[in-house]
Length: 217
Image (cartoon, rainbow, N blue to C red):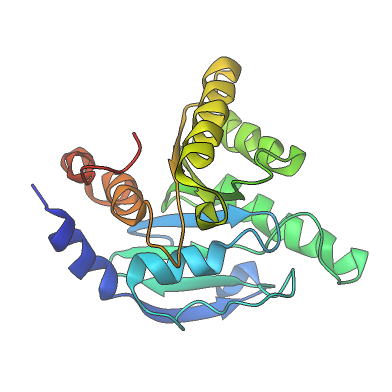
């Protein structure tokens, strides 16, 4: 059974593998992958950097839509994290957005290595219509999901927990099986809980027991 420290070491081993806008250039469809999805500027890249404790591994930007490719990061020879293009608003031509969405659709629908989706949503605005569509889409494909309610440092702890409970209640009522975790990259809130949830999907159920005390359940 892995401890939070064990998982931190495994995630810190992450390295850039490749970035591609082309389905034919994806890595071989073997092993296990977890993909990160979210509305543009929700904090996907910042979340990945916080989980792997590398500030510059995933490119971050204040400009929505900066991530335009599927970006793969290797944790080891068999497991990967994948940063997907942000959905929703982005200052790019409509044709480009359609290409992004088609690429994501094909990847999520067909990728055998995909073990689950981490949906990242700004806690101050969760859940957006785009978030709900993504969650329903993944649920229809039987993909396990984790919901990171990002930018929790923008709220006081009480309101942040209240927002998390409201979102979790909405998920439960809608029949979407996803766990909502309060998350902040700069404050490192929820990092251990997120690692444990992701590890459970990548490496087995025993990893799920590593949720750190004090992280919201």
